[in-house]
Length: 530
Image 1 (cartoon, rainbow, N blue to C red):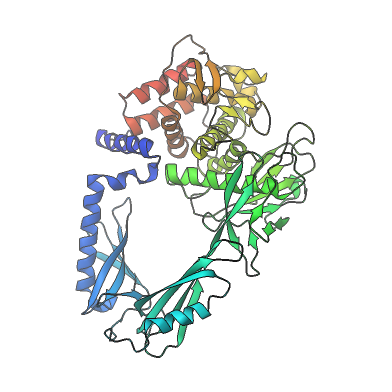
Image 2 (cartoon, rainbow, N blue to C red; image 1 turned 90 degrees about the vertical axis):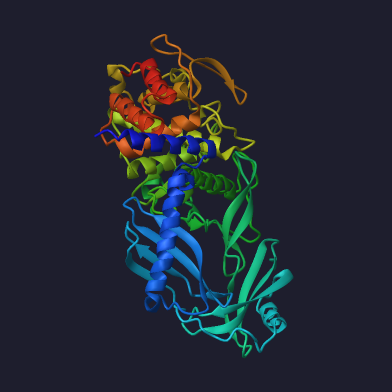
């Protein structure tokens, strides 16, 4: 059933905002309708807490401080509050009000501190004593500065007045460091302490993208590991195990004493250099999907993947494996091609995981070509998203690790095997060559036909029917392809089905009468898919 015209208009407005902001997943939040629904949910949640005060431990002197609102597609509402008592933050007093679409209380979640009533006027222990205790418990932080804050500590279920002191400074490797120490404001006894900084930012000297920042994790021994604490990815050395032998726990985790990784050289003998590219490019891929489409990781479940570098011996390849939920990269061919860890290659392989988790395009025939084309498209878009000064966005796939390029979008046949135009024989081609039809379509719908120079690279894209195509930009084209993949395509979609899927997606996002819808159809006709 086709979406209603109202639905199409709403999706179209969302897509236009998303294209401008590169944030498809959150565009509706800013709309007037969403704001109205959010405000109504918050007002009903406040009323529900007051009406069910015993359930929430809500009483005199307390204030609810709005923290977050989640509105489910079916109208269910989840409103999260922090809690103040007599103007002081209550640590452990947070709660969530769960409501149905009409704002009626359905359930509740609350932390331990549901009765924060304590005297708050005169702490017996002054702030300076709490700060001194905090500094004592934060050794190894140079240039330490302490900031005490009076709070109601109720995280263990017993409310008491406390000093929460944050010590911030610099760790021994020069990284930001901090510790939070909580002391009883009546007795001076230590209540709790924990690191304010769990993650670190390392420096990587990469093979393909210059010097890059790396999200790393500081270990208990003071060293660092290539564990991304934000995205959940880990990077490991496979020690040249064959791809067939690699499994979840294979190899060794990369660790380092000073959080400075690699030497930035091609064909490097420093095994961490390939790991730098792999770790940084995995993060860029994760962020592209998250910030552009609201997708949290490969399976959209927030979980990170494992990346193995130095797989095989002279293995000039890279691949994604659903079995180990991991990506594997080889060291190149031992001659002209170095490690397969460049930006668009990493984005390409991780996109195979996204395709597997969504349309699961069968890796054979035309659906296999679409599978490969989808990875080429989003691998390329990751490169555009990263906006790296060394590896600029282009329509040349794997141009860094397989110079001058492995595949190109404007005229795929220049590689000697890929198809520019659809014909019945496309289904019989290797999937890496039948993908040319999809890649050519993506270039035409993004940039249009004819000669053009983009980011210093000259392109000249013909059409199979002699037509002239005007592009809509690759951000819109990628938005359409992502919706087609995740909403309309199935495991056996062929090129004709991809045309229908992408037209449906363009209609949903921009409207059936839009220039974007017309461009999608024109580009498919230009590669002989009708």
